[in-house]
Image 1 (cartoon, rainbow, N blue to C red):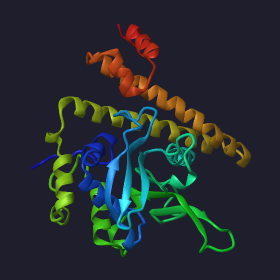
Image 2: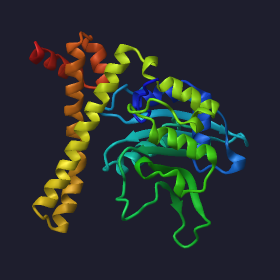
Image 3: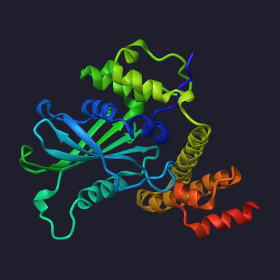
Image 4: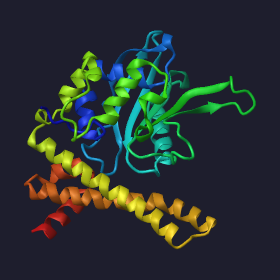
Length: 306
């Protein structure tokens, strides 16, 4: 039987959706809150942001420009997140994708709306406080909810909360989210319901371990090392705060400082990744490109390794 890799890792997600318009179109039409008469008809990948293979300092996984059935365009920026403190980053990235469209001297009317789509490997909100797994944010008038500014919208999917038996939704939506939620390294036989959908069957074929090169498998394993480091750092901060019984004001201060701690943690994870790649004989230039660490830092790590 086939062994699958987890599609929630950025390297597997990119292999499935990063160069396959048909699969990405099917997935986005299923997951995004698009009206039935405004579904995606075509899409093109945005080359302006070249993102690294590994989640060291950047988290965008795919950027695409979509054209709907009414020939209107919008941009989707997708991320996979494994830590709870990410909302500010999500706002910054989505806003940046909106602003990047406008070159100097161009009219604001040329801007296309932007959807930020985040797929969460951990819960954003504790399930006891909020069992909802799908969150859709946009700017709405405080007194009249029928009036809204739709150019910036954020969609967050909490995959651990997703249970297909608890929702009444489009069949394809359920099946694509089951693909992301259920398929992992323990999967030896994919469910027949998923195999029956041609697009999802193709995604399953691409997620098989045999479809990956030794270098890609090394990057896959290193990805989970980086995720583990990030999650451990964040959970450690939360446990420490609970253990010492911080007052509410002190806890808020810790939350504000968490962002800086996360960046530091990501840098440490990037250094760990760089050391592994150097040990495998990869050039310092390529290690720098993959981890987004400066060449001076890579050279320093190379010296300590030697």
